[in-house]
Length: 231
Image (cartoon, rainbow, N blue to C red; front, side):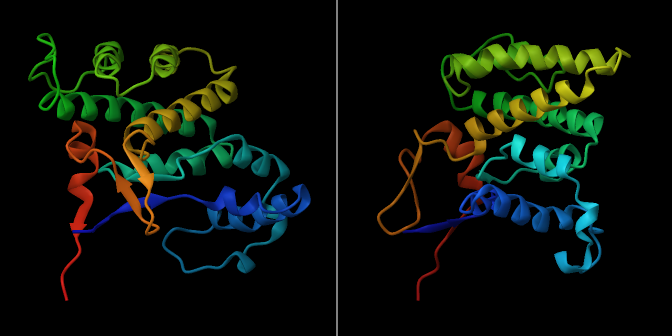
C-alpha cells in the first residue's frame, strides 16, 4: 500500500536556474528577501527593499547546495540555520550550526544503525553520543553508509571544529565556514537525502524505496512514513 513521507524540500535554486544569469540573480534576490524577514511575522518579498539583499549574499546563496530533499530530524531547526547564517554572512554561526549538525547526525546514525547492522563494533556497542567524530566516521564507513571521500573529509572538519571551540584565531572563518557547510550538506545527502541507491522516482511520479528493510531506511525514513488510508 502506498505511503506518504514527511520530507523537507529546498528547491529554490533549481527554480532560479531556469533563467539566464541576470534573471537567476533577480530570482535569488526575491527569495533572499525573506531571509531578512522576522520569523514570527507574515511578510512577502515585496515588503523588503531590494537594496537590503547584497550581491555578496546572492553569491553565497549560489555557493552552497542544501539537500534538494531530505528526511526530517529532531534537530531540523539547527539544519535550517546553516543556510540562513551563511547567506547572511554570519560565518561563525554557519560554521557552528554545521559542525553541530555533523556531530549530532554522526552520533544518531551510529547509535541507531548499530542495532540493525553487522558486524557489531564492540567498542561502540551501547555507547552513547561522543564528541569524538572518528569512531562514528569509521563505523558508518565500514557499514557503507558514508562514502570513502566524505570519510576522508570529515576529520578535517573536526579539526576546524576543535580550532574554533578551543580559542583558535578566526582569520579564516569565512573559508572554514564554507568548508563546514558543504561537508554538513554532503553528510545530510548521504544519510537522509534519499540516496539513489535506496530511492528512485517511480512510474507514478512518487518516490520508490528500493529496499525497505535496509537499516538506513528503517532508522531515518520509515518512522516518517504514513500509510495511505483506504476509501
